[in-house]
Length: 329
Image (tube, rainbow, N blue to C red; front, side):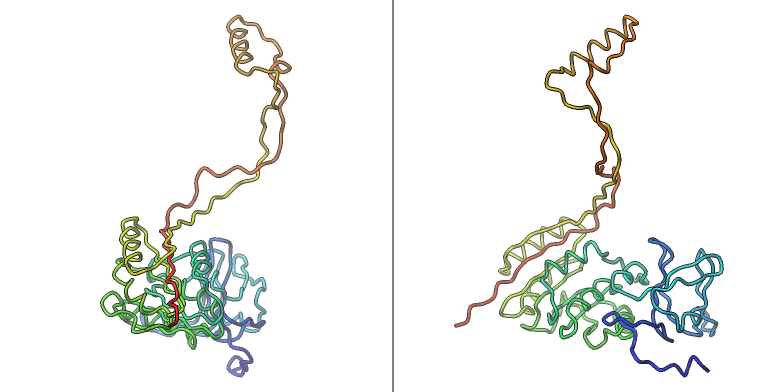
């Protein structure tokens, strides 16, 4: 068929941008900020019963045949049966918003702080445990590309296998190594090679000694993500015992401000607001309605930022530490 005759000039990946969608590519179908679907462009897929069926994606704005995206440019507005969406090129940020959840995941607010504080750059060697759904892994891989490497570990074989398949499909297979291992008991099997270590484990304090062994002799950074403060306390104690310095714990909270027009009284040094209010109450009791605007002072309207009363709450604590480099000699 025509679809099978398409030549692959560039393979779709998270590290390189391509212009036109081809067969077997990943497309992020963007409906709105909270409705995003990952679409794999294939003619057929296997149903839950193992039967081969036509690959049609169902959304709240209608259906879309995945194969209809072949030849369409990334970023194009695409028609659904009852609306429209946008066919976007995959990025780690978009993938985080629509990936299949095998575990709870880290989102962009925490991910950005982790990458900043671990001082990651192209060429860095990073250890991650556990892999989970691969949300953070994709962002780390993009940051350390093209010459860096990510060693990611998970306690569950099934999660490791699925994540490894995703890394290969997304063009990250050569720079990400997924391994099934109990790092609390057996360590990382990596000595003196890592620039940074990230831990997302129930008992991170049990892995500190293994992380110390894995970090380069020239030093490196460590981050531990924990939802409970008791985990943070134990981890900080172990970090100090192991010789880590610059131990600090952060919590990332987004506080949104809305732009609004508000009214405030203009400050007048000669006006006593308490006396003015008292006089107004006395006048009300006596039934005298007088225009007291002049006495109370003028009001001013202006545009300002007002913080919202509700906001996304606690996700977890990020504990960072530095392993200083050893002096030669």
